[in-house]
Image (cartoon, rainbow, N blue to C red):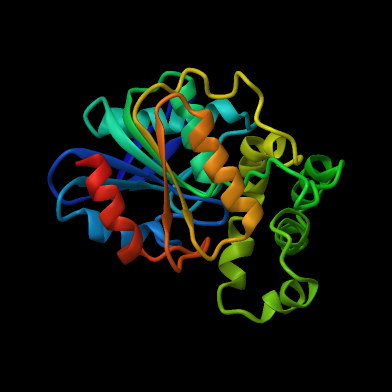
Length: 264
C-alpha cells in the first residue's frame, strides 16, 4: 500500500498491481480496496496492465477532510492518476462510474473511460428517489445512525425488497457496511440528479469526448439497462456492451476480457 496526498491534504491509500499501461479502478458505494468487486478485477487485469485501486476518501486506509464537496473526490482521483504516471485509463462501477464520468467531464487526463451500471434511471419504469432523499441521508449520517443510513440507502435508493433489507444486520458484512456508511452522502452527490426518472440533460457530460464504453449485465433490471444503453447513445464517443448472465454484482471473469480489449 502507498499513500498519496490529495489537493486538500487528505491522505489517499492506493495499491498498484501488474505491469503495463495504467488503469485506475473506482469503487462504488460502501466498497473499498479490501471489500468490493474491484479487488478481483484488479487481479485479472494485472496480466496486461498496471492496475491502481484506491480507497475513496473516508474509507479503508484513506483519510477524510470536512466539509465534503464532490470536487474533493474528483481531486482525489486526479491525485491517483498523477501517481499512475499523469494519465490513465479509468473504470468505474455503480456510483464510482458516476464519479468517473464527472471526473472525465472536468478534464482529468483520462485516455479511455469504462463504466459499469451507474445507478441512473431515465424513464418511468422505476419510481424516483424520494424528494427528501438527500436531506434525509445527510441527517442520518450527521446524527451517527449508520445502520439506518445503510438500510435507507438499500431501500429508498437501491430499492431492495423490505424483507431483504430487514435481514441485512444478520449478514457477516454488516459491520463493514456500517463502517463506511458515513460516506454514502458522497456517493449520493454524484447520482441523485440522475435518479429522478427523467432523460439525461442535453449538456450532461458533453466534454467526455474520449473513447468510452458503457457496460451492463444481461440479468440486471430493465430500468438500469435502459439507462446504460441511453448513456452510451448520449456520450459523444461511446459503445454499449451487455455481459450475458451478469447482474450489478458483476464477476471479474466476465468483465475483464471486455476491459482488456477496450483498454488494450
